[in-house]
Image (cartoon, rainbow, N blue to C red):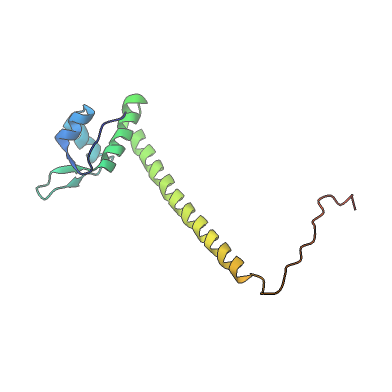
Length: 128
């Protein structure tokens, strides 16, 4: 479900409801169920960011196109968040390993004037 969004910023509940052709009460229900977390203005008006709208599109896709109920949507969203966190942790680990490898390779650099000798590796012991 692609929706045209031209600007960055925050959208009020009525604008979001109109953009996605849903009732404002549906958005309030999604918030009560913890599926959406719009920010609030000083006057306590709900403000939906572009990230909120992306999440809403995902929720609507699950509900409308796939027929997933509220409990299922909550589970899918939790799993998605956990996977994103695991991905961040894995990327951090990869970055750490890369840094360690580069540091160790630099520490083991050959001394000037010495040329490392490499013997050919025999892959098959039967042939000599």
